Each structure stands twice: as structure tokens, then as C-alpha cells.
Amino acid sequence: MLTDDQKRQRFKQLQAKNYRASLLLEGIHLEPDESESHESVLAEVEHINKLKGRYAR
Image (tube, one colour):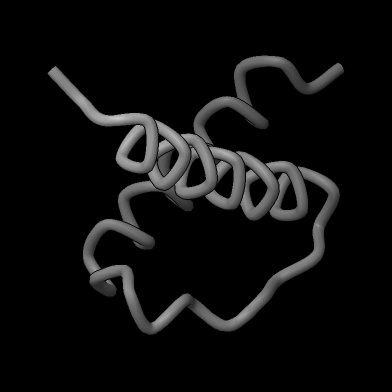
């Protein structure tokens, strides 16, 4: 079971990840965070690009 501090930390990480993903969807490209691996950022970008293609009008 997670402690309250661990839950807060996970929430903040997820919140930051979702914020970066929403910026990418809007076309704003940021430098990858040092805490994230380059590969996970690339996988995230690829996933976002697939979603853009699927939902493009």
C-alpha cells in the first residue's frame, strides 16, 4: 500500500506527464525532462502522433 506522500508524488508525476502530452498535442515542443529516459519520451511522442492521425479531421 502506498503512503500519502507516495500517492502525492505519483499524482504530481502523472499530472506533469499529462501536461507535457497536452502541450505536444497543441504543437508546443519542450525539451525532455531529465528525470525521464529519452526512449520513453520518444514512445510518448509516437503515441501522440498516432492519435493525431487517427482523430485528424
